[in-house]
Image (cartoon, rainbow, N blue to C red):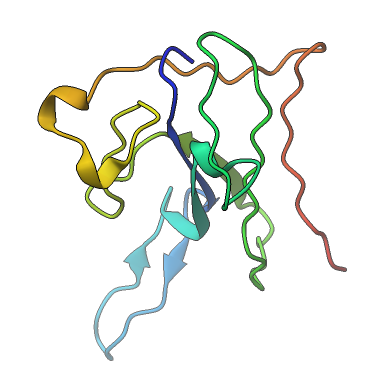
Length: 138
């Protein structure tokens, strides 16, 4: 990453298959087409400076590969047959979460000039693997 701080938002989404419908709410109405509907199942935000400790924030090193673990609370959700699991990783969820200036500073004291662009690379190769672990119940 080119900045010294960043936010990580991870979302797990249930993608409904083509041809999916929901029953009509009222008698005489047509079923609702749900083809390709993206139902967010769970999402979590991690401010990167707190990736190792909430009491001792740390900056990221410029262009240094670092491990970031985002734990999502568990939720009882069944991915039905034919549905797909989509995972999205993003760095901003404004306006739900305040903007991160991409700098290791006190965000509440940041001025407009403190906000900068940052490039974030998520590695997913043999030397730097990424993974998602989901519990499976039968």
